[in-house]
Length: 249
Image (cartoon, rainbow, N blue to C red; front, side, top):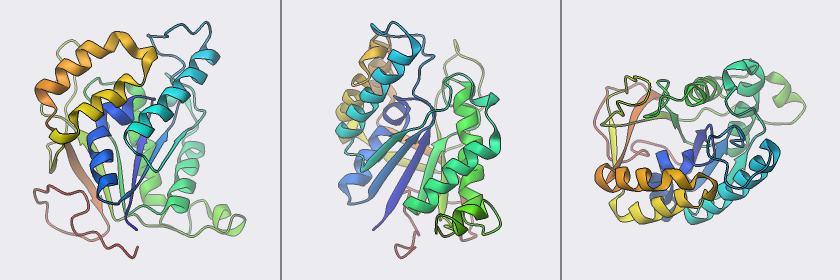
């Protein structure tokens, strides 16, 4: 079984940044997983939630609805504080993600770029840092060895790590320097489903017109930058995130 793991910061990131690819690969028979670090309780748009705790509950449900539209095999929202990922203990978060990598055993991991994605959100940048360290350290027996001894997990070395990237920027947002795309995944046939998955996050309703207009104008593909690979190779243009991946891992 081929397995794909997506690590994000907030509910709705899975749809906005990765929705087309998640659905495309699920339809190809790949087992897909999404780990979201926060329940998004600090969001500007709050629906009819009267407190941050209430918003967190609401957004968890929205996340599951989005994952159902994208046919995600398993989606999980962790409990780290929205808007404060830069204040979390690095080893704690990386350990949590390394544990899940060892449990899921994906061949391919994808996350947001260190620039923070097209919005430049600091939580996105931190999700990238945590995910990158977990990608590398989950495969090493000398990192988080307690997971190997107490939980009977085994080191797992995922074969490829990708950062999402874009071919455009938003001048009204913080300045970003996106990585050049090395993999371009055509997702045109999944465009409507991607938009529907984003709209499953009903608390974020004020964002819907802008998101849909942007995706319909610029979203016929999802772009990624290959950051690391278990097998050393020259950089090459790809149209498949699983290009060169060995299924038996």
